[in-house]
Length: 209
Image (tube, rainbow, N blue to C red; front, side, top):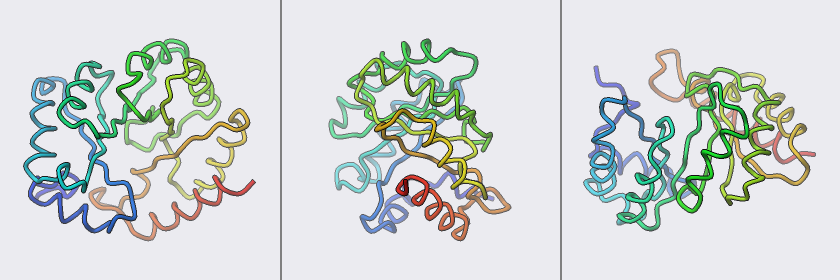
C-alpha cells in the first residue's frame, strides 16, 4: 500500500493547489546516506517535472539531511534562484557554539533554519538548550529565520511554546514546527482536528503577551 506521506511527482501540484495560496507551500526532502548522490537529481525532478517552481506553486525546500554540503544549496539556488532554502539541524551532541560555527557555512544560502533534535519523531526539545543554540546562532548575524521543532504539537503545545517564548531574549522572533503529533493513528496522514487545535494553540502562545 502506498504511503501518502510520499506522493508521486504527478500528484504534487493538486496537493499544493489545495492551499489556495493561503500557506507557504514547501517540499521536504530527506534520504538515506547511500542515496546522497541522487539528491540534486531528485530535487530537479520534483520541481521541474510537475512544473511547480516555474508556475510559482512551490518555491521553498527543506533539506532534512544531516549537515549537507553547502555546495548543494548553492547548486539548487543556481538552478532555482528564487528558492527559499531551509536547513534542518539535528544538534545531537554538539555544543551551541559548534552548531553556530557549522550553520555559518550556509550564510547567504539558507534563508531559514529549523532546530530539530527529534528529526520528525516528536521527541520533546529541551527548551533551555534550544534557546542557547538560538542565541549562539544569532550572535553570528547570519540573517536566517530560526524555528524550533520537537514535541511542540501535543496537547500541551500552547504551554510549551509559551515557555519557549518566555525563555527567549526579548525581541527575538522565531517560528515553531510540528508534524508527528498531528498525524492520525496510522501515522500516514494529518488529523485535521489535531492540526486545527495546534494552529489555535500556537497562535495564542506566540501572539499573546
